[in-house]
Image (cartoon, rainbow, N blue to C red; front, top):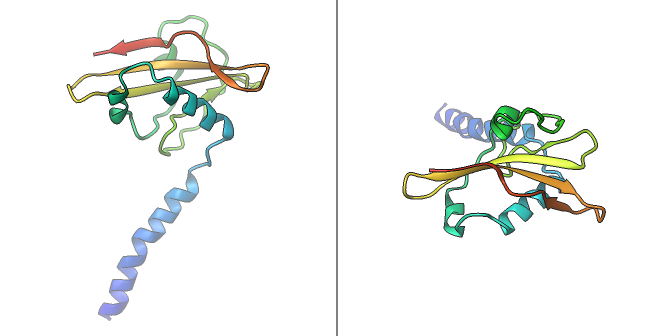
Length: 137
């Protein structure tokens, strides 16, 4: 009986892990290219990347653009709950991409901002202008 109970208890975490992994959608090539570029051109001290938020949060246009009365028309992605990169919202033509990042340093402070990317004629993603709603504490 104990052997059966041990096998049952050992199988529960594996089953739960398989369900969580299967539910998360795979990263698209665009998401990987955008986030890779962001990390290569990280705007703050590289040591702050240690505090980069490691799980995604639901994309919220209000948080991304604040009081901007005309944010770009984005298709808000469903929340996946997966690890990095953050939820990236694209426009309907997939020529514009936006995400919000958050990082904290060891001094009980951090930074947050909205990053906008555009798809160039060469079919590469390029950061558009400075980071919006940049906040540091």
